[in-house]
Image 1 (tube, helix red, strand yellow):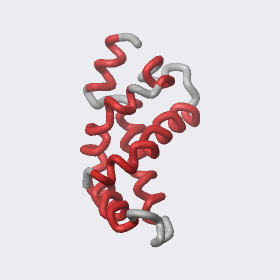
Image 2 (image 1 turned 180 degrees about the vertical axis):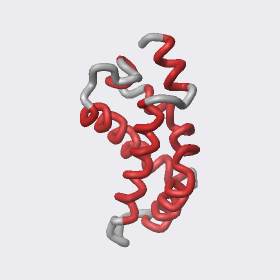
Image 3 (image 1 turned 90 degrees about the horizontal axis):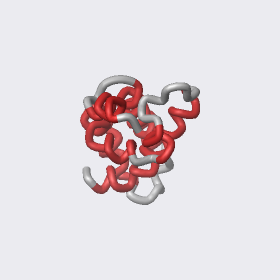
Image 4 (image 1 turned 135 degrees about the vertical axis):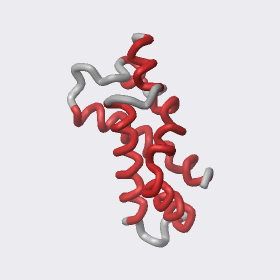
Length: 105
């Protein structure tokens, strides 16, 4: 990973940060559509409400975790990567972090 690309990502600008914000929003939408019998549903809904109100703060809090995903670490700005692939890498990480994010509410 180029240090300049890492700096851009860590400064919350550009494609990675905006994609994380979108992924947080999409995860919140998915949570609100879950069956009420989903384990920990009440806390998951509380997290989703927080995410809708402040997705940028959540994105900042998980940026380093997202940067650890192997495909993103190799190319944090996604240069030459199709939007659908890049979005999928980021969404996968955010979805994987959901339980930890919910427990932090």
